[in-house]
Length: 233
Ligand SMILES: Cc1cc2nc3c(=O)[nH]c(=O)nc-3n(C[C@H](O)[C@H](O)[C@H](O)COP(=O)(O)O)c2cc1C
Picture 1 (spheres, rainbow, N blue to C red):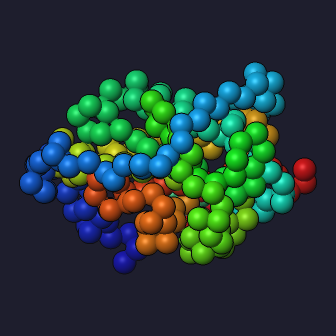
Picture 2 (picture 1 turned 180 degrees about the vertical axis):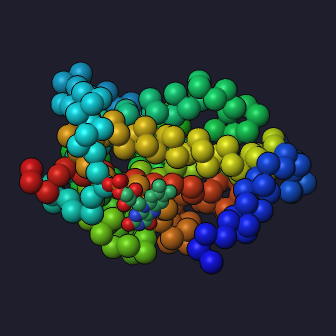
Picture 3 (picture 1 turned 135 degrees about the vertical axis):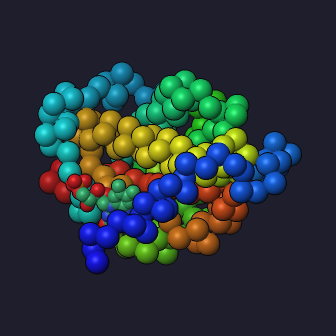
């Protein structure tokens, strides 16, 4: 029965446990580093970062969209917004040292203001990881091909290993919440700039594994959003 919430309640109650489900030794493990990454300092102009809609206008206009203009977006703006989003996550939650930091990966397919390709963004640093050749055809990365027609995709990752050692299933729950808040933070700020985009689950893990070195534990994808110019632009 659709209104029988017994199973869901049991799942939700499971998330209240703070007992690590693994060995509790996450501090001894690290996600794979990016040896050949190139640090970048995105510095978009104040004009490029100025919202074209205020909060009310943004909330009234916002909607998810699978139709995008085949135009580039300023990647330096996206990188700068994402860095600020991750700094807010770090400062608001104060959990980076205990439960691990969020990482963002920007797949900039159509770009101006910075090289197209793959970037890694944290609260501390932004790095260029790979060009479009290495990423390969965007439509091969996810299940829903519409998403690959955006100018780019931002995917949020967390260390479930660290979160589990910190607070078991509750740690996973908080990681999912932090990633959701960060993704909506970015998505709404993009919409305030006149861009569009849709939240979605993220890439097929095996299709981007060689690019972001996600192992499902020390680095695991939680949520993603497209960004693009609206189709009428
Ligand atoms: C966690 C999460 C995952 C989602 N995943 C997908 C997805 O994989 N594919 C999709 O078409 N919509 C997905 N959506 C739904 C859209 O992003 C959007 O929220 C929904 O269509 C409602 O439209 P609105 O945002 O215009 O209100 C997801 C939403 C959330 C919150």
